[in-house]
Amino acid sequence: MVSKQLSKYYFFATLLLACFPLFSIKIASLVVGGWVVFSIVLGIVYFKNTQHIAVKKLAIQLALFILLAFWCVIDGSTSATYLLEKSMSLALFPLAFYFSPITFSSKQITNIQLVFSGASVLIVVLGIVLAFIEIFSLLEKGSLSSMYEQTANSPDFYFYFRTAFEKYVKLHPTYASMFLGLSFLFVLQFFFKKYAALKNIYRFGFLFLFLIIILFQALLASRTPFAATLFGALLLSYFHLKNKIVVVYLLLGTIALSILLYFTVPSFAARFSEISINNTEVPQEGLGDSFNIRSGILTCSFELIKNNWLLGIGPGNVQPFLNDCYMEISPSAYENMNYNTHNQFLGYWAAFGILGPLFLLGFIFQSVWGSLKLKSYLPLIVGIFYCICFLTENTLFRQHGIVPFAFFMGLFFYENKKEV
View 1 (tube, helix red, strand yellow):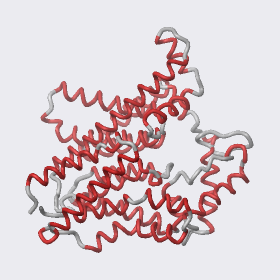
View 2: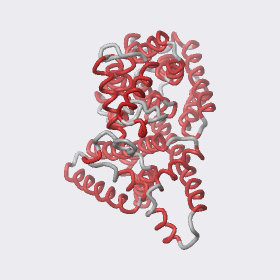
View 3: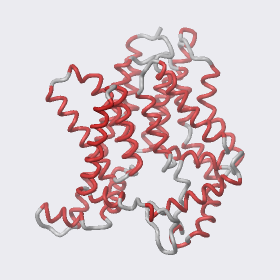
View 4: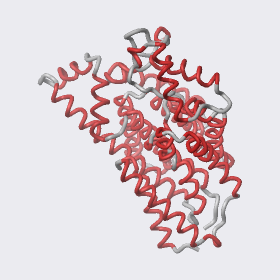
């Protein structure tokens, strides 16, 4: 049996890992690598005294990475090697959790989630403050209301804001918004669990925090994570409250809040104003925005998959095919942009064939199924959150997307699976 002192060190190491949003990519890789080595070494030392899950369940967890690694090795291109490197978390976290002789308590898992939430909010606050400082330095000096008018009336505000945000914190706004979405769900789960014991002042404090997170997401203007957060929050509220009327009120409140944000937050309004039925056609010559340009991306992605749906064409061949297709649609709109499929399921399908999205769904389903049997709904909500985000972003093609996904899916799957 692992000593209490060693278990405490391992928990603190995991809390450090949960601070991932604060780290640069290089430091995050070192922290992840150190944590994985720590887990596996502990597992080897205490292997005989640890109850492990069946190897076939581990194989299901590793199936997606094995498929990906097989295709990347066969492909051999630079882009395939890069993808394999970025995807190591799909193997490292399942193996680390499998070998680790330590199982976290529910309280510890909550603390891990809250530390991640705190780190996410902190890095976003830093990025937003620095971005506003830069933007305000470019505005004509005047009252706060006049400076707000300048930003509200600028059609390019959201572009400058998002660009400045990413420049200062090295975090793409879409992934920052996803971090905030996960944080919102983790804190909401904690709020529901502790609600009865909280004083009113703390309850209002939590409500204020929820509003702040939603406001930050609106400023970052990433549409899908914003929608996924609200949907996940409503679903989690329903599971906890078991009251349809209250959920209806929450839905109406969510709609009202979204309308308010649309009329008060320039970046939010600019991004969501692009959404319309009339803006779903592929971009014409010289025209294109962040919404209708996706019509061309989907057109080319489906064309690729239609002719290669069973086995795919390999990760190194997807982007050249898409680029050639884009040039046939609108060279001026897509030239030198290298847009990927902007859909994780389609990205895996195009590269690895039909097994790609199926194994991805299997990875998620296996992680949440055990929790559902225990009537723990947060893993399901997080899984749905990611599935929604996957619809408009190749989330698992970046470290900021794949590390928290693989870590929390693994944490959910191995919760209560072993006895220390």
